[in-house]
Length: 139
Image (cartoon, rainbow, N blue to C red; front, side, top):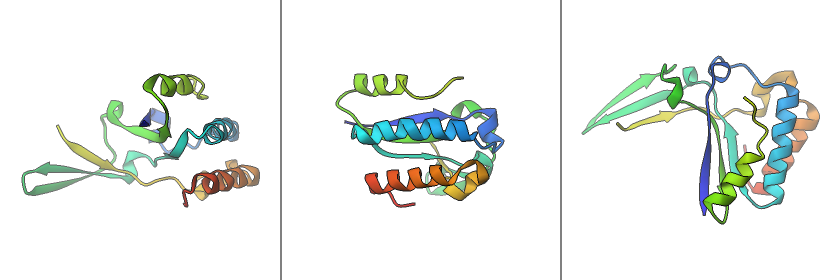
């Protein structure tokens, strides 16, 4: 089965604060494990909701609502798309992730490597390119 793992937004992600090099490296290592195990199909971080838009549908009427959005409990900062045998397997993978701490559709841009600035080192950029090649996901 495929499942999506949604990473909730925080005040920091909504403020556009970039993760540290150490955090990027830890997430890169976890992503390598997922790819090697054949679990990870896709995964991306999302820009803050201030860079996004929502659309409300009411019959034939369409209303565009520009970000930022204040309902932080409803916002996401990123996602993975995983291929697993069961929900139990997905739960077990997620336990290993390096984390510590009406109808509306939200549209958000996906981070690119250059958005991380100098914290995203050449080694991390090479690692990211290798992972994308392995999963067939072009930026």
